[in-house]
Length: 157
Length: 157
DNA sequence: TATTGTTATACTCTATAACTATA
DNA sequence: TATAGTTATAGAGTATAACAATA
Image (cartoon, rainbow over all chains, first blue to last red; front, side, top):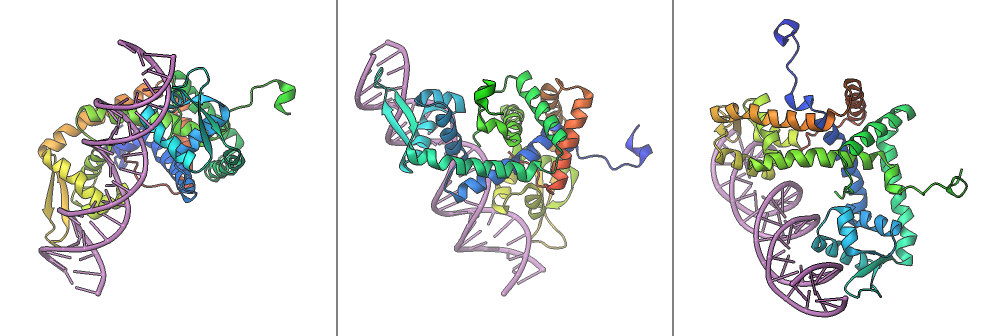
């Protein structure tokens, strides 16, 4: 039924796309988390690297770069910043002294929970308006999309 | 029930956040559309501006900047690029000659549907794995989030 | 004086590629 | 020769602030 006969305002064609709504909400949620991290002088990439090293002790820089979908050059700079904060250590691998094994310092390990709390708070701030069932359903739909398209690179922005 | 008794692998704490899954999927969907646009030498910001001017003929640069959540300086560069492609015209307002009224050229209007088709194809590519009901539900949940948090800035990246 | 839009400048982030050290 | 990581360089994108023209 055309708009002429219904009298409806023609919709903005952008709004017709699920990708539009996904980006609209995602930008807000991620943007406000990035701002919160920035107040602590931390970038999202640094935060992701911190988490990934915590999860995968003694990972190499190359593996981390792959997991984060970044080049080795870019990762190198991220690691520089974390090391400057004394939250991360690079030690040459005994097996192959070209490779750098990454590990959190005591100080890095100690601070990580505070950042996780910030992530929890940000998630809660946005998604608590949904019921538990709705949150479950949203997660199911997003995971179905991630699975179907084999999306695996960790978002770092 | 702790993991020790269930034998489950402790989940990556990042995965616990809905914001994580939202960003994971959103980055892929928007990234692949941005790549498609880039093959046509067009940025997402230019594409959004093109659509917005089409929807709001004779809008001023300042209003467009507000709608897109960009500064006037940034918008000015986006408009320069669109004008260089002969898709957009700036004409001084008769009421206030400081203001620039924006309009698509004939050529801009003619090309827009092709870009809309690209957006449709991208949306379809990702979301056709969901059933019609699931797509409706995903849209409902995202719009509920957008409404609840009064998210209105058009995503331009 | 205030506002519209442009321009100059700087900054962040990232990729590319040259480079060093090791294998 | 090939590979791990670093560094130098360049490019995109954007914000900030100084600016010119107009109100």
